[in-house]
Length: 191
Image 1 (cartoon, rainbow, N blue to C red):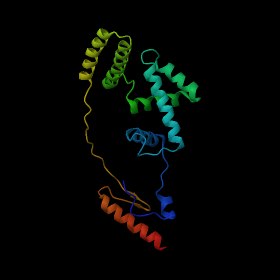
Image 2 (cartoon, one colour):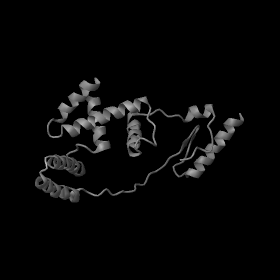
Image 3 (cartoon, one colour):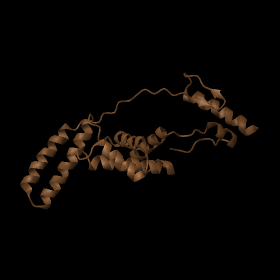
């Protein structure tokens, strides 16, 4: 992405700044993971939230089938000294970002089984038990075939441009909104 074509004067910048909610932070963290940590920079709060979400994901993956959600919630509460609700939020965010433990999520369940079978193959090869490794390879192939394809479904999004001191109409195009914003910037810089 290139740099914006204009700089906002400080007086106008204050009008357009928006405080982030935790859900906004989660969206930014998702973007960070999608970009491989390169295109998005996390602030301190987002970095801490990312660490907590990763810890929740790790607990879900490592304890899948061994511990219940309430026990995992207790581990998170103890580690980060947070409330039951905050720990549940971290679990929910981890499921949303990594698709780790939602029981209705067939792709996540198959993914966990694939990881398990891959570990079994590695252990069998290490023991030089190639017959067992071949059996696990056949099982792995079945899981790969069963793994659902990821299909991108484009969604229509309505964009509403709210400009400082001005509420734009819903039917306003991006070009028209930027033209209004350019005019506001020019007015502010001439003052």
